Length: 341
Ligand SMILES: [Zn+2]
Image (cartoon, rainbow, N blue to C red):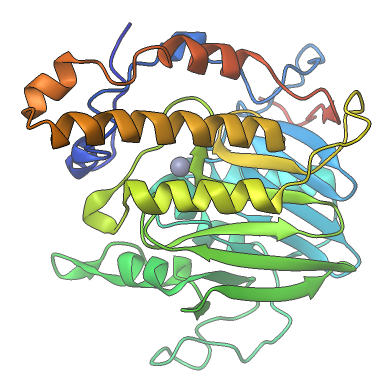
C-alpha cells in the first residue's frame, strides 16, 4: 500500500501535514470508491463531472476538485466551494443543467486551490444582489454583475498574499464578504444557511456550511473520506483543532433514530469523497482521535519521529479507511449530465 501523500501540485509544505498522522497514515487510494455509486447513462458524463441529487434543493457536483455543493431556489443559486480553476467552466455548465437561475453566492469552505480556484469564473458567471458591493480599495466598477464570494477572512488573506510582485490569485476570485467570528449566516431560498468557522483544524480558515432545512452539512476539508485528514500546520491547522471540528460536526449531525433502518438523518458532504451520516462522522472522529492518542503516547515515551513511524500508530485503520470508503449512503439519485464530453 502506498503512503498517503498530498495531492500532486499541492505545496510541499503539506508534506509536513499532520505530524501526528500524515507520515503514518497508510491508505490504499486505489480502493477508494466514488461519493456514491450512481447509475450512469451511457455517454452522460461530461467533463468528468457528475451531479448528485442529494436532498430537497441541494445537489453536489463531483469531479471538479473538491465536492461542489449547489443549493437552488427562487433567490438563485448558492454554491459551496467552486472547485479547481481547470474545472470552473464545467462547473458553471453543470449548475446550468440543474437550474437556469443565476449563481448568487459562492461560499468557500477553506483556502485550498481545489476549493477556491474556480471562484472567479463562477462569480463572473453569476449575478450579485447588490450591484455596488466591492472590496475596499477596488475600483467602483470592479465587481460588475458578479456573484458574491463569502469566506472566513483567512481565505482572503491567503488569496491576496503576494507571490512575487502579484497576488497568489487574481482579484476577481477573492472573497467579497469575509468574517472573523464563529458564525456567519445568510437566509436564501427559504432556508437558513449557517457558515460555521472551525479554528485551527485542516487550516485556520475552515468553515462548515449547514443548510438547516435540507439538513445537509458541507464539511470541507475537515472531512476527507478518502483518507486521513490533512492537517496543514503551516497554515494554522492542528490535530487538536481537527478533532474539535469533527466533534462539532458529529454534534451538528442528527442520526435517524429511533427508526435506524431509514435512509434519513443529516447528510454530511465531505470536501472529498462520499456522503457521510452521523455514525460515519463519529467513526472517523474516533479513528483520528485514537491515532492521535497513540502518537502522543509514543512521544511521551521519548520515541524519535522515526521510531514513531516504525511503530505504525495508524495500524488497523488503513483497511478500515478502505472499507469506509466502500460503503455509502443510498439516498438521492444521480442526475445525468447532458453536455457533450
Ligand atoms: Zn480539498
